[in-house]
Length: 99
Image 1 (cartoon, rainbow, N blue to C red):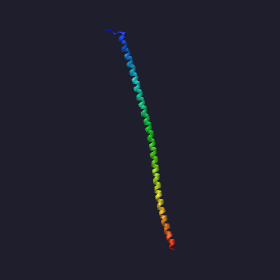
Image 2: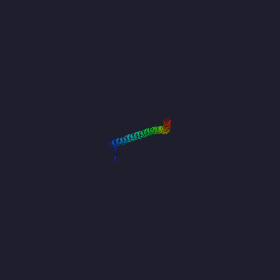
Image 3: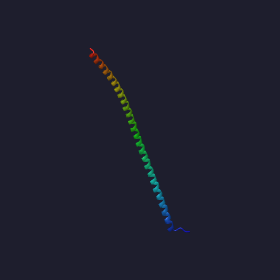
């Protein structure tokens, strides 16, 4: 069996084409992987930023809650003082009327 140029040409073209296809597929897979890694990095950065914002908001909420509790305590104290003052006023009014 003698291999002449007519038989070798399609084999060489097929080998060259297969090598080119392999390089193309390899490059495409590499680009896909790089794009996926970049997306992963972007999502990680976004999650870190979001986590920091949530932590700041939690701190602000804690501060506001503490302030609200202080204001509620002060309001209760003022109501108590007002009730005592009203009792004193009523007592003084009765004392004036009984004179």
